[in-house]
Figure: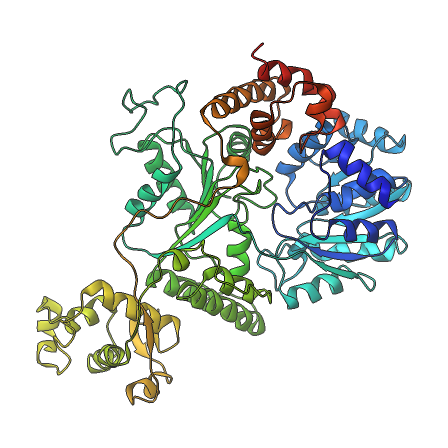
Length: 624
């Protein structure tokens, strides 16, 4: 069957070779063996169960956590000529009966279903009567309480093994540390599963972390790298005829996602971006379901949409051309950060991830963690994960090496495509400065927040300092040789490294932790990374060969994109479902003249060749 699998890959999907662990995962299904597949976002996990579903008799049941995305997944499969459907609460009773009839008649190869629907007695009774070839559990980390996105409905999926002991179960995820992997295997009751890890590196993503100083100003400067306007774009309301807002931001930004911690911040950020002439949409669990669905649909189907969201948005997003992901607040773990940034650049083209964070993010997340009702063991693990993320934020060496090391993956050389590689930050001996800061916290009584402590350190005769007599302290003004921002950086690092804590029960007062004694005694040498505060134009994102077009090819590429958009609207599908940008790039460069030549393009399978080949050849030949 391996030859048949390769033939399906070529004829149905339009690709010449399998990537990563795809072939190994397919072989597990064909041999009726369980497997846990860990592959990066955009690595092609779905092929691991879709191709076996086409080769084996019966239907593959795919468990997916998000109802909203099932329709687009199924539409994309139908565009490839596959027999697929979904069964969820969005369907009318008549539509549900139609899907059930297709199943009973053996007319479906893939059925997508949410875990809560799958485990209903009537659904299980339906499956009992069907010929099922395998179960695929997508986003499998949701089953683990140690994962970053635990979902209660996933816990009961282990009963699939009890009810269907002879069917293979394929668990798939992009992110799972060793403990989460063990939990997935145990809770899904996988039988001696093959562990297939396809690597975590996303070389096309540039990772950047910056101190949070003026977040909106920093975001605005960052977005200017992803803007552009075609001749056919009309100025948006409140913009100039040149298509830019008063601030100079173009109205036609690339597609991207901006994550915020709170719903309120999501709303405020989206409104602010809209006032700048950008197509920004809010998304969080507090919005009406119809609004969320409408915004998600626009993001998937239109170009230039920026989604401002809480982490409620994003899982399973298949949009390949997301060019950037920004975190305006600190995520909770490296796993969460990796999963969320992985939504950028699924097409393999250059993309960027920007994280802005500051001391208040650290304080807020730690307070949320300590105030939660989770068990102490869970809290301990979450603390460790947060500490790992904070340490990664402050690293001065290659970020990619440090990120992959967290997932136990070796990256032998600095990547040359992260902020630290492109612009290495200075690292200095800050032992003496740290002693001054710790002493100032101690001398002021460990009863005041960071603003007052730094005011005393800098020798500012504020009302509070005069009221408490702090102008007479030995530490008053001993920090005048540094600017306030540099002291804030050092304080953040002392907080991250466990020398200082913020007492949320005492008006956020800074307090020394036992570890600080060794530093005050000079028994520890503290190396401090200095923030590079001045914004300098960074080097252009590394370009892939497919993105290098001359003027004539670029003009043809735009014509192909316009025609794709027209077809997408006619078929009510996202544009990338018809062809990815990379396939259009190849059309513009290779300019196929016949259907045979067109069929050789990567990403052109038989169904798409028959459906769209002639039309796109006419565009290439200037007939449309």
